[in-house]
Structure formats: structure tokens, C-alpha cells
Length: 235
Image 1 (cartoon, rainbow, N blue to C red):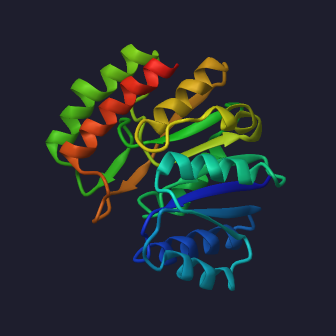
Image 2: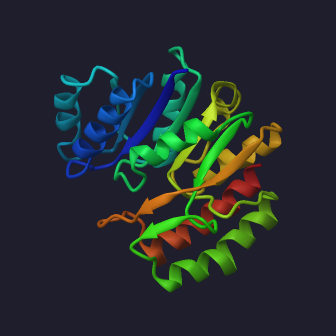
């Protein structure tokens, strides 16, 4: 059973090397058929050069270099690229290694009969290091999650965690329908799964918050809400 893991990367020269090396090493040691599809999007640093150097050591690494920035854009491009090769599971994970490879491996091991499985930072058994600031928690609980539920009728503890895995048939069905290039990408993905009657479950995970996050509470939060209403209007 082969797994394709999409890794969107935007100016990740400081972290991408460790992420790729750690993921590739663990999956090779455990003899798990896999590929890592790194999708650069709008990079202006040396991310590409670093990835190309690591490719010399790990032949499971593929690279796509997009000029335009956007995580949703990058994941959608990675999905379509992965579909050109044989695989059983296709998923994605953030480039900062907030989800360590052993916890992404749990998604593969526990997907079972489900069509998809998503890592969740907010279930009872989940762990986050270090603990998140209260304003992020209350914003999610009191505002963001209720808005998503009202607009789209989907119910998860964690829509935005950057570690998700799907069976190939799911990606074959929805990859061409993805439209959100940045914020609200995860919500659109899960909403399309619902519309197509795919079953997606949540799995508690261990999450390591990283420095230099590209999420800024006020500006990014406002963009996320605008994207949600834009998506609702489209769908």
C-alpha cells in the first residue's frame, strides 16, 4: 500500500531539509512504500536548492515549483501530480514538521474502512506543545467552528490541522473541484467529501507548534472568515 504525501512549501529554507530527511528516513526504515511530493509555491528563498540536494539522497522525493503562492493551490497541484502515479493513499502535511512523521504514520495505520482521516489537535486525547494562547482557543470554539458548521454543515473539532490523508478514490473525485487557493482550503476539501458522501474521521494527534508561523491572528483570521463566506457563495 503506497502513500503519496504532499508537502506544500512557501519560503521554507530553514525547515524543509529537516522535515524531508526525518520523514524519508522513518518511512524507509519501516519499509513503508511512499513518496514525498514537495510543492513550492511562490518561494523567493533557497527552498528549491535545498530540496534538490536532498533528492540526491532520497529518491522518493518529487518536486513541483509553482510561481504563485497559496497552500490550497499547492495541495491541489500535488494531488493532481500524485494521481499520475500508482498509490493507494494521498494526503498532505505541513512543511514545518508540526506533525512529526510517526504521527502521520498513525493516519495510515488507522484509516481502516474510512475514506479519509484527519489529524485533530483539539480532541480529548490530543496534545499540543507548547500550550496554545487562550485567544486562539476561544476564537476557534466560539466563532470559527460554529460559523463553519452553520455555513457548511460539517462537524469536526479541528478543520485546519495540516495533516490529512485520503484514499485514492477520494482525491480522484474531488481534486478537480478544489478552488480555494489559500484560506478555507481545508474546509472546502472536507465539504466536498461530505457532498460526495465520503466518510472522514478525526484522530487525536500530537502537535508541536512551530516558531515563525505564517498565521497572524488578526490579519489571517479576517482573511479566513472572508474566504469562508466566499466559499459558501460559490458552493
